[in-house]
Image (cartoon, rainbow, N blue to C red; front, side):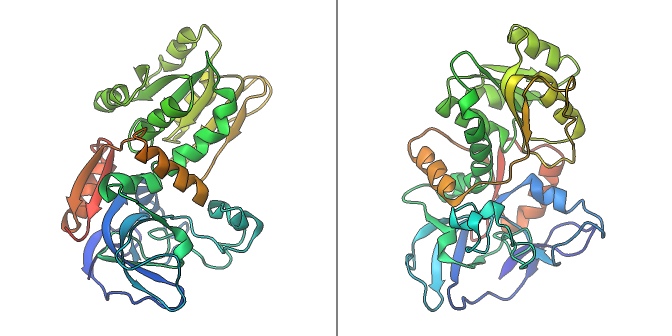
Length: 346
């Protein structure tokens, strides 16, 4: 079967032929209908030899949806032909975090060698995907897999972050979204659906700011040296009660903490390598800064329910599996408006 792999440190993703997997006991084989392309992949492919902890070659794609093609021995709860989305942050299933459905915070995954698909385990940008356990599958129940597959990360990750800040986002509050691309444009929609806050979107790209306006941002501003001052003006000097940085480079992290108001929540979601300076006189009084990761299994169910209700809609660009390297090039160059989705089986 065809698959898109990152084969060596410093290389580029390539389309290769690999054996079609067969499900073992407890496993599920999916025929992939759609797979998302994510900036996390770009980050992984930028690591040096000393940083790379994932086994190579690696089949990419941690956002996956497909139809159940075959079941391993003992599998229950799913049926052949069923259309499903894949919950990506696989855990051990036994620790205290996994017992709560928060496999994204599994306490032993790394030491037990458990990896998410596309981030250590073979991923979804292939004609077939082997899923380790049926608990990691969520029925699509009529949702379009092409527009839904990004929600497994680009929807779930901002949803998990926004839920943490909802107690702050009361009427009269302001939420700032930094980076309005793949995750950010979904985050704007989630904020509009879940809170009464005024949503201010920031980006360096006017095309992405226009997308931000289209999906519901009340204000869309260029992310430049004047941005922090403009937000202070918009809020009457109060600052924002919720700040969501979907980029995570040092300038955006600095901006996130600069616009955060008293008793605010700052969520650094992007993995650009930036680090927040926190302390008395540096950040606003009682501002909390967190770095969340992905989301829980139950939260993915909630995100898909929001999609069924029409509350969120992902802007996607589609590519064939042979065009996947081009999709990664466009993502790297900042040319993808929304989310890139690969269709491995046409």
